[in-house]
Image (cartoon, rainbow, N blue to C red; front, side, top):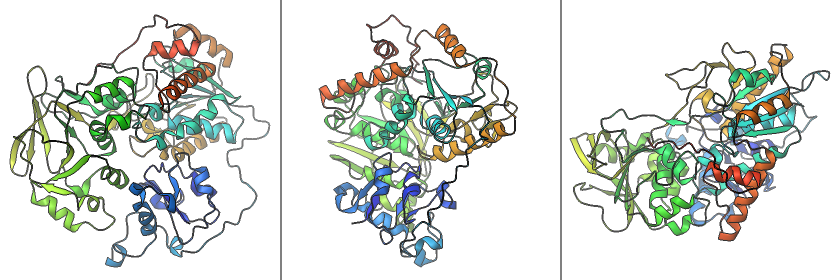
Length: 569
């Protein structure tokens, strides 16, 4: 019985570090690690010890004989990664090909030696006080590195009164395995060297200078919180919404109002074909009763139960050979119950791309999908379906008081696709942090291996550091680099000396923030949400407003706190 890695793989490589026979690739030391979509287990080298499954934070490692019907193909996907067949036999190097030594298909037992701790500062070095701004994966991987490998004291700061970041508000509710990484991070919320100051916004409640004045170093892990624009006429009209708003809406983000999304139209156009676009499309046409077993926002579940949406069109400027989503997400889409998957066969380049696709190309996943020359002048037919329309670019969002149609350009000219909702899912973009330099073109903070340019003692990690690329696990390697740079600066005496201490910062935060939540309050929120979930047969029922979160954290009735609601854009 071998093990296989499935579609929820987060790429954080914990499994690699515990595998005793080096059968999981690519490893962080291999060139392909930075670009691979997922890790793979060599079935001929695996000794079935199960260490990888125990270590996986997202339950992506499954015994082959326990794979669900929708996951069965992952046994072949794992094996094919180590095979010299198909693409390799035709003279083409597979895109994620492991090094030659990994293809010997025999156990290669690690020679375990004495542990090496490359994060240790001199024994007489006083404990560092480090603030981490942002409690999503990037920030928590940085905090984990500091807590496990140094004696640092960590202050976790987040503008929302609840921890979680992207894990809580960015992962689709029907991906519970991916959300499980949050349980790993939650262990550190209660660490004796951690102080939590949630509900504190840097730049509003405290300045970056004030935060730095109370800590030896500050790590910003603020992500990429806005979206890229289409820059087409009508983009701002009602009915045109960013995917970031839609994802936040179905995940109960306090910044997005419950009525921010209107699902009264039969057809929705989604611009983009990356993982977020597929998440959005899948949620729109999934059976609401299946979603009722997840932690989707109550208001979103109610809206989906009353939704009239029957068709989602995924608009791609380029062809199927350039689809931006991962192969595993495409595979999952093919197994969506009660939903037809269709490729609009309007352009001869579409069929040519499928014919030319190799077995490991993403286009090959869609090769056997139903193809149809869609008549866009007709309303959506019965049932629910997702339509891939490649080689089609949006030109304008049309309508008066709301959206009526999307004008597109393809190889045959221009045409209108009637739709009542337009969702742009063409990528995230970072937002500048008050007081720090910002590269407007890249949407990132300029840095050198995580060290913010011109700001000693200030560091970045995650998407605000490298741009919106890579999944949850990619932040682990990113955080290791940033923490390594920070510790090297500390050892070199390059960190500024803070003027204030931890207690002084706590007093400052309590004076400035009207809805401060600490570790005890975070635990109260966790208990309340999971308790509500058990009552309804769900993993949790999320508190969806700042008022609810803060009142629950404080153990009292709802307080009249001001709620800032972001206008959908």
